[in-house]
Image (cartoon, rainbow over all chains, first blue to last red; front, side):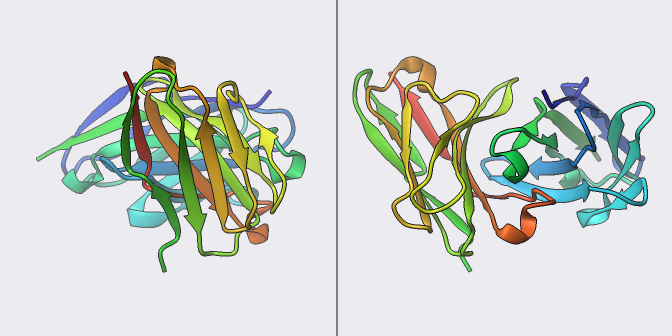
Amino acid sequence: AQSVAQPEDQVNVAEGNPLTVKCTYSVSGNPYLFWYVQYPNRGLQFLLKYITGDNLVKGSYGFEAEFNKSQTSFHLKKPSALVSDSALYFCAVRGDYGGSQGNLIFGKGTKLSVKP
Amino acid sequence: NAGVTQTPKFRVLKTGQSMTLLCAQDMNHEYMYWYRQDPGMGLRLIHYSVGEGTTAKGEVPDGYNVSRLKKQNFLLGLESAAPSQTSVYFCASRGLAGANTGELFFGEGSRLTVL
């Protein structure tokens, strides 16, 4: 079965410093990987995805993620964090329900806190 | 463009009461999903639909029912609410163009408390 793991419940970063939010995955076949962000009292917003191709994927709001097949990881990164980046971040993998119309399976989420 | 709209946004129920959450999308999407979000557990799939008139069970379907009578609407029902169903419920949708990529569009959530 497909699954993702986010090993950190919370990541604390100073504004202006680089940030990394970690994600590892377990899939059968080729992985379809995603990052979503959730601001307080809001729904999830799509940030970026890896389907195939370049291992470095660029997304919204200056975020990028690096796909590493040998380490089965898909870490989210940003070169310079902003206070406004503070939110809950979810890694996800395409799941098994519905066959080719698979849902997304989400990790437990990582709370990112960026301090001024 | 409203996207995915959920109603109600908040609801408090007593154990044993019933209620229905409505999800409406105006993007002509084929696929719709209901998730629940609980602290430390991420989002878990309750039920989903791959088209009008079809529904299927997800990871945690017990205690819930769904209907998709119209393409734009996906209803989630609780027949006899239990405190374990206290959660934030999210509806999501995606179109055929997303079949190979999986990008979902989410509503803003419905917070349900069962006393």
